[in-house]
Length: 462
Image (cartoon, rainbow, N blue to C red; front, top):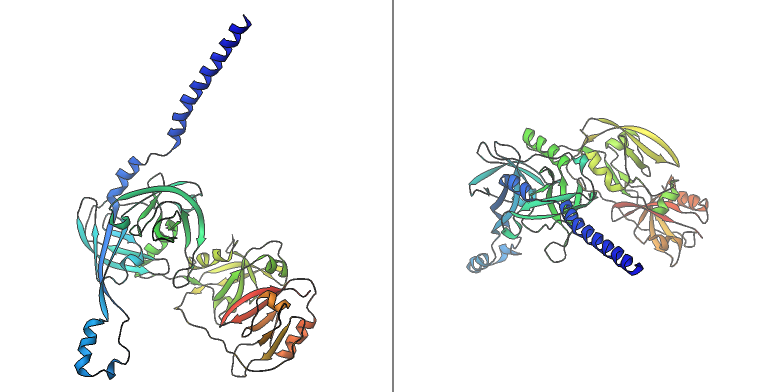
């Protein structure tokens, strides 16, 4: 009897386990999303974009005017100054009357733009406006009653949620790929060094030809516009980046109204706050955006912000990293007054700043100079005054002693030191007084210029 009872119990256990496995597998399968309905409903509003244009090759013959006439035609035939270019990408219709959104780099340098729908209809598109800073372009085709897509609320985008892309990678029309959102708010400098887009990072397979196409959530709404990939091979390695829908809506509205985009401007250069800088400025942890330079006529300077301030909050929103600030400022309407919470000399304070209009880029230069001062100061530096015709204030680094505090901080000859701790450096004599008063064994912030570009670092006198 005991053996029969044991066998019976064992059979009941095994049967129960088998049933559990049989019912669990389908349950887990049902949790995976089914994209078929989404693809059927939204694909008609996705378009393939092809362009034709001409660009300068940059192959102009040097000293062309000195080539004899009998040979000039021979060289010009073999080194044309222009060539035909073709581009291919994706896009999507955002209104039934034919407005289409895509990437600026898809239509850049295009003389002719052609749009093809899934039902094989083709249209010639005209450019309403472009915004290179966000890499967006608004097109228009002459058609009515077109299928169109709706934007999602960017605030609802969460890391880990499912997303799907439809586009024409490598010319393979209406290809579908899926994945999840890997991160949000990624700051990725563009070729023009702009960081006005807080990118959505995904692991969706995005390849050349997907550019400008939509990134959907499970409700069929557009959460982003596929724009960039990170790759070593030219193809997808699971790192793709999309422009958020909220930013795209703002750009579209301005392009429709005026054909161009206006952005807010603070007039500052910023850098990341690392652990040593945070400690030297009185912060408990690395956070915020450190002002390393500013336009003396810009909104920040006119409102009372200073070089060395750390911006902790902008208009009530936390600035966790330096890359968080440019998109916040860029989306602020010029002329608006916003509160900015800063850390200055170890104390927090709020300054109201009237935001300006982002101007065209302009270069900045800084000078260098000759000079002499003895080595052997506690930092291990030999410095000299700047020439009188240089507007920038500071001292020029002539030599850096090996294994010194300055060398460990990364300073090198040619740098111009403009600030030690909280104090500005105006001359060699002022520099020496500040060095003599620096604390020992504690990190001290140093602002300097290198090839005209300002930055902060920290050094510690042992």
